[in-house]
Image (cartoon, rainbow, N blue to C red; front, side, top):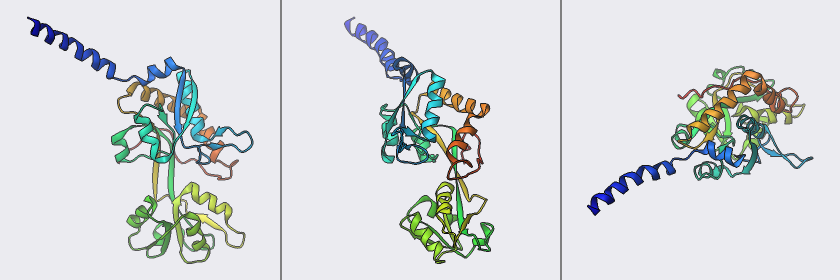
Length: 273
């Protein structure tokens, strides 16, 4: 009888403990009254310290504010190293990630991604006086990219007949473009926009309009936190519908910024390839 009694206690206890183990990050956030948002803090214009105010500002910072407003709580930022992003999320030390987090199948197996809130087009930069107008015009040409980067692999796969030359960083590849050692440079549109602004008047550059590939970014949420993910997506969708998302893009990337980019995406579920 005692043994049966013990089994009966165990049968009751297991589901009780299982219920405790099931996290509810959304409830925790509302109880705490604060959304803890993990971000980089060193990636202008996404999250960086404003020189005048010494405050953390940027596109990712503002996106976190949208989510916190939806939840009716304050927002707190935790600065993370790139390698620490997913471990900090998985450990529960941050509630969401807004940290230059591009979607990949490997990452999606570890965490949940929100709807895309930014898309990074990977494009080609050429000298303004070049005859090159399209991606196809670069077949068999010399193209520079950062050595060991995903950009280097992508352009090699896209233009296998071209000679892809790896450089230590974007400025080194840009110098080679100026010196006519390469015919084009491949990198993210944002990086290339900075380089266009740095081009000397004697040797201007331009970005080819068509992207080679687009990399969607999402906010990171822990696996199993479906209620929180739904609220994050709702906040992003509301911003898209109201026009607030467009306003934030224009604030940080548009014609009034140094980048002068045109928004070529909208907030929507990430299209998994």
